[in-house]
Length: 80
Image (tube, rainbow, N blue to C red; front, side, top):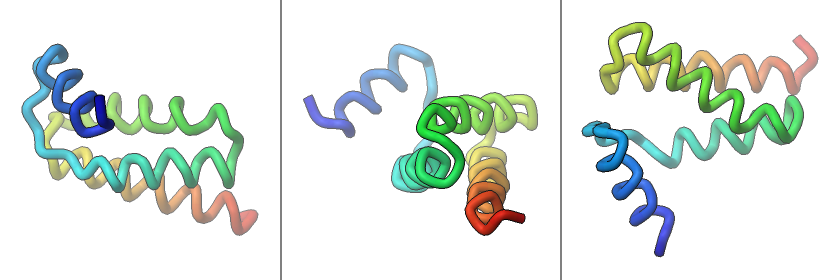
């Protein structure tokens, strides 16, 4: 089973019907793991998903939350 197959199956089981940019989410997880701490990756992606859901759960909400977290991870790396 590929990552794409897993994502499709999990989305179906969870009742999620969004065409999310999985590359951006995986990039965010990588950046959080490398610039903050390895356990930050799953926690960051969970918090992004939760925040997006609290904002309404649209694709735009997800993208906005991913952008916020990505910017924070970049700033974290720079020591800001």
